[in-house]
Length: 300
Ligand SMILES: [Zn+2]
Image 1 (cartoon, rainbow, N blue to C red):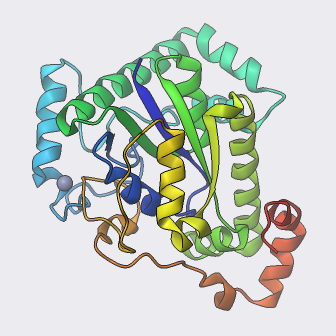
Image 2 (image 1 turned 120 degrees about the vertical axis):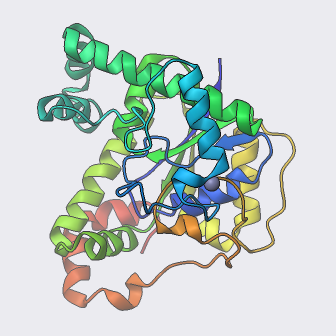
């Protein structure tokens, strides 16, 4: 059974930086976010190697390999994302991760209703073929999926196709909410509520796994002590030999994800811009929504 390492976190938690650090290990194969849901305009999207996605040699090999396997594969739609399709189907998939009371009913329904079952089976199959192909091209034993979202992890776990270990990546909720607020142009109330909702779902999904298969890591520690943190993750993943980090983001791989993917070679810097960007009123709004959970995690 192939081993999967999954980064679980809300968006804007530093998962792309962590992916780059882990991808430098020769036994890890990865393309970052395998769900590939945020590519947008495929004509202008750049792979982390700097080439346009459509012109990158690695991605060309992937496309040829998928064609040989007899499955449809397009850069516009990898066919690997679970929360696509009709709205009611997406809602059902979301319920499985976000609502502890309804998660069992949701997973039962998804496996009973023929439309849902065949859609799920097709997506699982597409993920399996793509993961095996990427691992064979890159030569890695463990596949790292940095897709982050708890809905996806829920479906990967239920499929029982992989031996899955999870790195639950935490970041100060004020930092996550500040980035979310800027990126999506929403107010602090919506940003903090989204962070809290996603974090609760992450905790809920992780709680259903064996404790030995979940490792909690803080983004701030990744930045302050990258060597110690990735060694801890490598040991958790059963990787004997490590790599050394020299304080810079390694330049390697063909990674999909946010704009951070084009930062190879730059220094690893802790992003705490929220400390100056958030107004006192934003901090009060955050505190009322997510202050408790944030403090329990040591963010004072
Ligand atoms: Zn590339």
